[in-house]
Length: 112
Length: 131
Image (cartoon, helix red, strand yellow):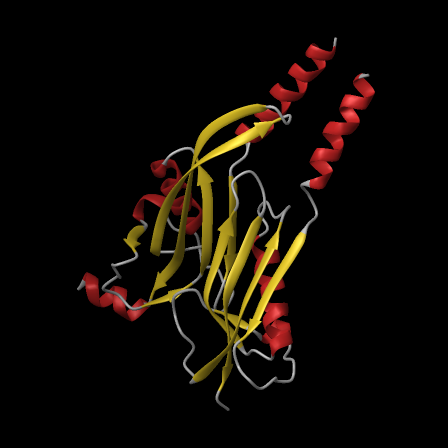
């Protein structure tokens, strides 16, 4: 019987880890070619020097992201790069009490 | 026997929950940290305030602690580790929540989630202030 109880408990714990969710909303009517995620700059309160257009909103959630801020930032950069973004502004990290974390921001493209 | 087993699971889970601070931090902008500073020297600016100095942002920090003070102190400690002079856009939110432990045991608690953007004052700006 203890074995069965343990299995139920283990299943509950397993169900809470390893989940990754993405939310991407494209504002711009035109699609842009993807950019390199490694080149996407992230700004929380400051702004890039160049003029830009907001092309979309990106967010990511990872259920087992304890101390995973860099992972969240990099996942967000990948999502923004798929939209063709040069940078992310208004970047935020979020915590979900009891586990998990998220990141969000606006994907922008420089007026070249 | 079953009750003993459940008790061990509940206590074990509670210890695991209590023992760890949930937080996220990352570098932004140039993704560059600086030499560590002192937590007690970190200036705090909430959303309607901003430093007199010009500054560069270093990153973003968010933490979940047992009280507002603990949460802000934790942010300052982490910001100092990144080499920050100040935290801007600071926010503290409290959440009252209900957790169900082992499906049927309700636990009420408060979570204090604080966030802020660690920044480094521009050198020329900081020197000007000292003169």
